[in-house]
Amino acid sequence: MSAEPGAAAGTEHPDPLVVVRSRRYVVLLVVVAFLGVPVSAAAFGFLALVHKIESLTYDDLPRALGFDGTPLWWPVPLLALAGLLTGLTIRHLPGSGGSSPADGMAHSGAPAAAELPGIALAALTSLGLGAVLGPEAPLIALGGGLAVYAVRLVRPGIAPSAGAMVAAAGSFAAVSTLLGSPLLGAFLLMEASGLAGMTLGLVLVPGLLASGVGSLIFIGLGSWTGLGTYSLALPGVPHPSDPTLAGFGWAIVLGAAAAFAGTGIKRLSLALRERTGRRTVPSTVVMGLAVGVLALLYAESTGQDASQVLYSGQDALGPLLATGTGLSLATLLTLLVCKGLAYCVSLSSFRGGPIFPSMFIGATGGLALSELPGLDATSGFAMGIGAMCVAMLRLPMTSVLLATLLLGSAGITVMPLVIVAVVVSYVLMLRLERPPGTGDSPAAPVKGPDS
Image (tube, rainbow, N blue to C red; front, side):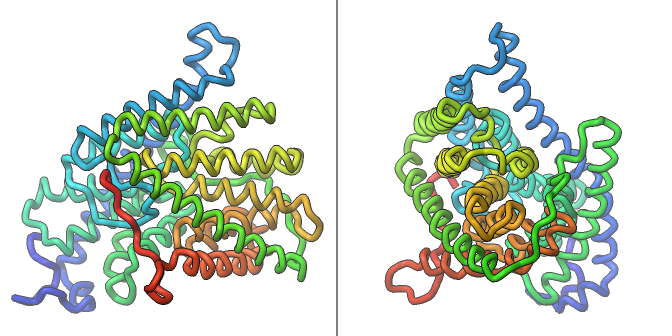
């Protein structure tokens, strides 16, 4: 793998068919299959450590200090500590703790080996201590970086094209079951990368192989350790009613609302990042305090647990669907506002991924609207997820699949409504993000000083 597979001398971009038929490509597939084992094991360990830190700091530590349960004010100092540790990591370690989540799922290639410790540490302190972000972006970066680093230890002269395929395969393995299915993780990475045609096929084949191996490793380790697979799942989904004309009307409303909400969250997070980026450590502490105060306000005003505002929301989606119809409209709206603002603040300063909080916020908005006539809870839940995901990620296919595959058989019933909500949200979001004087072109991602 020291040369580009199937490349002729002096050819910068070889024919993809020639590459696929070459012996070096077969060797690459074998290497990728072996790499899938340690990369997915490392990803499993990372997720297990995040969950352990969550339970230790939010549940066990208050009891160890003599409190009878977790005090309502506990998230405030916890998030201040998260801001301090994350800010120090971003400021002093190579790589600025990884890419800023305010830029969405923008992919800039595998990080260098020297940047991996900073990415891991910034993600652990952000996610484990309560920032409103998900683990997918750090896992993608860590998986790709670890895979390339491992191959370069054996073959230092690996070609850039082969290195890119190895990095993609490592990312596939790292998120193989995080979203509930290896195929869903593959769709996310394919759509985010923007590849197409035979070039996509070159990356997709080793990626799917690594993803399949990673899925097996996640399942095996989950069974062996008893920790589970950390896979997105919703048990006991209520069956929705068949789509109606009123349902399609609500899909348009939800799509439009998500486009405005998502655009507002992105603009505010970028504005906060621009203002706070010059003083990383103190500003991240302040942003952490803001997230903690929002959680405290939610708990004080509703009597619900502050943890509903904190963290990614991945594990809270199931309980939200199960109990959301029992919550008052005022409680759902308060949760929507507090979670949305905490998400915005976390995007601006912490490190993690944007997917799971957007799913939770969209689901909460859909449940709130289901209090009105013509919309059942499951349909509102699914449409809200799809519409908010596409507003934040700009990945329409992934957003539809996230909202429907998550619901199992019920997802087939609501898929037409989800598609309408996603399309409305996507088109309107592109219009809202259009910079003045650039026609119909969507806004380009904004890079902050720490990205």
